[in-house]
Length: 113
Length: 114
Image (cartoon, rainbow over the protein chains, first blue to last red):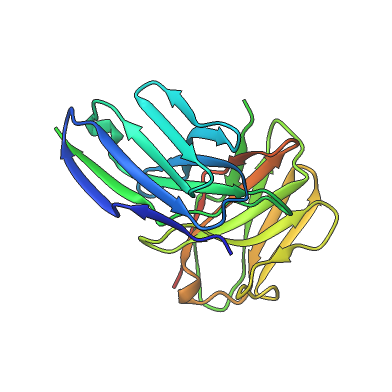
């Protein structure tokens, strides 16, 4: 059974800092891995999707890397802004069967203005 | 782009009653839909996988007789919480898989059982 761990659980930083959010997973047989953002009381917004054959993906100030063999992914946020405040979820997708996502417990980020 | 819509966004029901949540894929046909539940300050946990025209597959520990899932068409899956109790109060969210493994999430539904 896939286990997903995200570190840190919570993070509070001043505006402008560069951040690294970590995700580790126990089963490396993944099809892809997604990073999501969840605002309080809201659904999920997909930020980045990395295929298992890829090493990283970039979108604006966000960069996600994937080391499938070691079961790790990182989300890098450059020049953080108060609007980045949210919970960030990592979710690897199974490589077989129904291909559901397994979510980590998330990192709650607060960026202080 | 592809959109998944959930309804209702918020629902309050009395203990012992049943409530239905709908998940619709608006721009595409979804052969597979997933239902997740999220308790406060916890992550999303997969409840069941819904395949069009067949019975849903439930995760371990999820009562299939309590959480009824129907996927009668390629654009609609429903989750019915039967005989709801306060401990069923949670955030329920669905996702739909587009052919080729792209997954889209609905906006989620908040259920409060009083």
